[in-house]
Amino acid sequence: MTSDDLAALREALLDAGFTVDGVAEALGVQASAALARGERVPARRAATKAGPLGALIRCFVLGDDVDPGELPRGEYGDLLEGGRATVDLRPYAEADGEPWFVVSDRTDGGTVKRADHVLGVGGASTMLAHATVRPEGARSLDIGTGCGVQALHLSRHSTSVVATDLNPRCLDLARLTFALSGITEVDLREGDLFAPVTGEQFDVVVANPPFVIGGQSVVGSRAFTYRDSGLVGDELSRRVIDGAAEHLAKGGTATVLANWLHVRGEDWQQRVADWLAPTGCDAIALQREVRDPSEYVGTWLRDVGRDLSEDEYAAWLDRLSALEAEAIGFGLVVLRRTGAAVPRVVVEDAPEPALPPLAPYLAARLDALDLLRGEVDLGSLRPVLAPALLDVLAVQGDLGWAEVARTLRLAGAGIATEVELDEAGAALLAGCNGEHSLDQLADVLASLGVERQAVLASATELLLRGVLRRTR
Ligand SMILES: C[S@@+](CC[C@H](N)C(=O)[O-])C[C@H]1O[C@@H](n2cnc3c(N)ncnc32)[C@H](O)[C@@H]1O
Image (cartoon, rainbow, N blue to C red; front, top):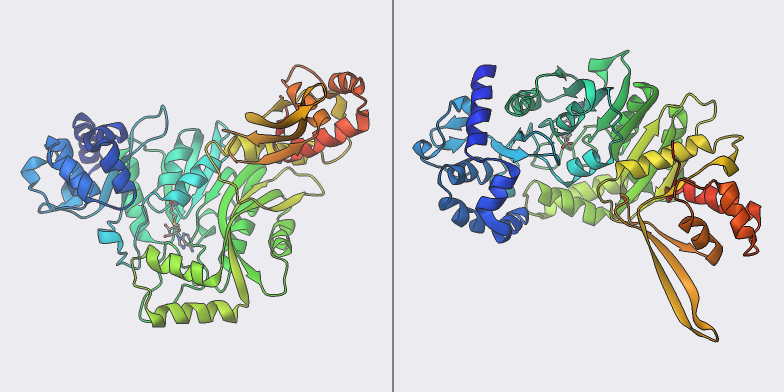
């Protein structure tokens, strides 16, 4: 299809109301919720009554055969064979942005059939998009672009976007994604990991790479390029972190999803720290989930719609056992090249829900690592508190309610962190509105008998945890 055909098709899709909101309205709340659970019947029933928009939904979202005459007029080219969609095509959107479309491979009944299957937008994709720190005017790189979803987001704030993939089918479908989304400026390159960008540097690097451990050469099955790297153990994740750091310009930030092994007798945090330290970047690795080997194998067999048959399951468990894997961690890693002589590395268990917007939280933590590296006049800082709620537990005392515990919950801040505070800590945070310096707040707290050193120590800890944020 020519770019003119695709531009015309974009208009036809939009005219028919094939947008995120249009589809939600046509399906209604219950059918949309059922579809999100992988149940298609309610959506099919609703779409049948929704005219040409409903035909688009049945054809391209549900994967049903339709009479092409029911579809809005347009040149569908090889997106259709008879009345059957050759791909999954659905609207996608960023709040207040231009409407986008994402093209990926169909997953009929949840089964992945092709080894070169092009993955659609999933939970990991959206988590990475929410976590990406996005400076305006960035030169950006998306490694393993797949259907192109990360590159779509990068196009909003970047002067240039390079998107790579090893799988040529991904590049074909990503090209359709960009053309149908009205985006022309993505430079698509084929190749292994960072080979297509040798010697180049970027302000933003993102990667949701094929990090699955031990899945290759599943008995009687094939490896899937979207998840199986062909490398042993968690080597792919280590290489992606290393490559992302190598291609970061000074001040640049990389955001990468990774899996790592918990090897018997080894400290997992040390393993990840050993990957991060040689990058020369400040780095924060958050472990979002841990699965034992059987949970892990079950998850990834179900992911491609395979039955949990004895042979495949057992062979995968054997490979994990050969790696001495006690568990596997799912993590999010951010790196920033500050140019500092001694980079700082944090590796944490962070099982709390990660909510949008995650990026300001991560940016604040990276800023704090840099700020608190050396000699700094902490007292002159005027920090602000991240969006938070304070829960106070009180018992009846002689003079009314006596507070016995204070829990600060970061809410709408990106991550659901809880911090226990003493009275002075709560009073300090109440005053952190960006107007008062820590010196001024320490003077006030002195009247409660709190020492200046204690205030500054507490402020340091809260800055490093992303609870307090520096004002510019
Ligand atoms: C999990 S998918 C991520 C797709 C998309 N970026 C997202 O966020 O949803 C991983 C992608 O990496 C690609 N890939 C696999 N091995 C690769 C390699 N060695 N070099 C570059 N890309 C690779 C796959 O083809 C696939 O598109």
